[in-house]
Image 1 (tube, one colour):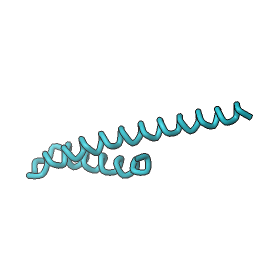
Image 2 (cartoon, one colour):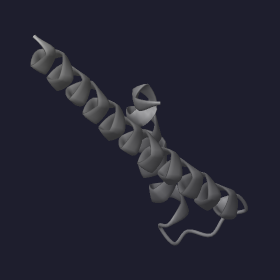
Image 3 (cartoon, helix red, strand yellow):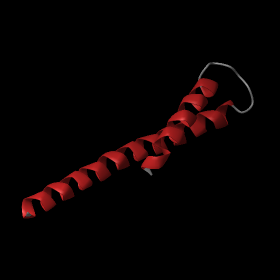
Image 4 (cartoon, rainbow, N blue to C red):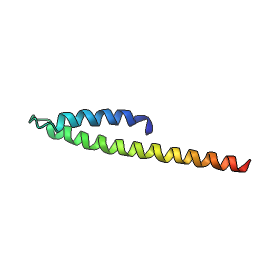
Length: 67
């Protein structure tokens, strides 16, 4: 999931710029929903990266303590 963090960031920024600029067009609601879901995906992928890095750090500490 952390491999998609940049993709979610780009989609979130682009859809936020298109959806929340105040312009009225037929697809504005859809773009706003895409922004919402991409933002949620971005948060999940960032949390996933943090959790995985902590697990790897803890595993490395445990292996060093066993030596």
